[in-house]
Image (cartoon, rainbow, N blue to C red; front, side, top):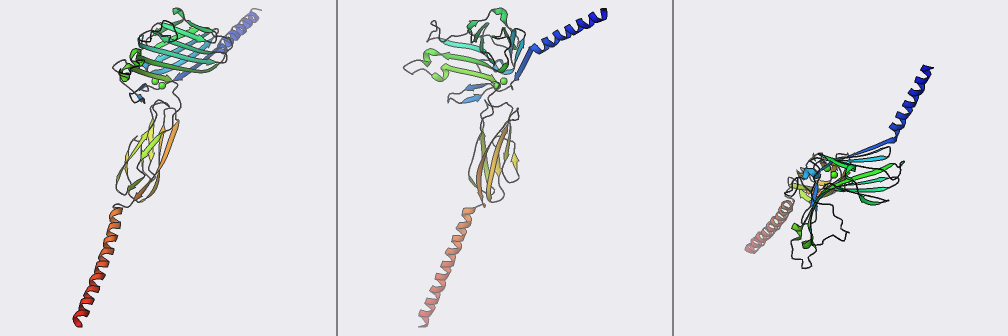
Length: 325
Ligand SMILES: [Ca+2]
Ligand SMILES: [Ca+2]
C-alpha cells in the first residue's frame, strides 16, 4: 500500500513537472555586433563605430529573448555595451509636448506579436511604457529592471494560451533640436539639429547589391570594380566574392583586375552575410587587344605608305617616259 502511494505521488509530481515544462515557451533572437547605423547629411544610412555624442556599443544589440511561463511574459534585450539611461520618454501626441524643445534620449524598444496581441514596449531612463490591444500605460517599476547590459520586462499576457509569432527590438539615440527643425525661416543648420543613431534586431533580410565597373577595357589595363551593399540589411560580418569570368576571383569589396586576353566577360559579385544569405549582381565587360587604337592607326599608316609608294612609282614612270620622249 505504501508503495502504491509512492507510485501515485511520483506520477502526480511527474505530471506537474511535465505540465510546467510544456507551459514554458521561449524564443531567442541574436544580432551581430558592429551594425549600428546613422543618417549622414546626404540622408544616406551609414554604419558607424564611433560617435562623439554616445558610446555606440550601448546601442549595439546582441540578443533578445521571449519567455512565456504560466501567466507571465518576460522579455529581455541585451546590448554590447551597457543599457544607457538618458533623457525622458516623449509622447509627441501629448498636450505638454513643446515644439521648441530639444529631444535628447536613448530608447530601447520591443515589439512582440503573439496569436492574441501586438505588444509595444518603450524603455527610456527608468520609465517603461507598455501598449497592447487593451491600452497603453507606464509599467510599475517592479515589472522591469536593468542589469548592466540587459533590460528585462515582465507583464501578464492578454490571453493565457497565446502563442509566439515574432519579436523585434530596437535601440536608438535621438537628439533633435525641434526649434531648428521646425523653423519656418529655414536658416538653422538642420544637419546639426538632427542626430539619429540606431540598431535593430533582427536585421531586415540582405538587400540587393549594386556593382559598378567600366563596360570596356583593354588587355593589360588595370580596371576598377566597385560594389555597394546596404549594411543595415542582413547579418554582418559580410564576405565578398568577385568572379571576373577569366578563372580569377577576388574577396575584396572594391578590387582592381587586369585581363590578359581580349574577349567579352560576364563578371559577377556576391555578398554573403553571417546568416548565409546571399545577394548577387552581374555585369559585362568587353576587353580589346592592348593598344587596339594603335593597331588600326598602323593599318592606316601602311595604307598611306602603299598609296605614297604607288604615287612615287607612277611619278617616276611618268618622269622617265617624259625624259625618253
Ligand atoms: Ca547589433
Ligand atoms: Ca542589427
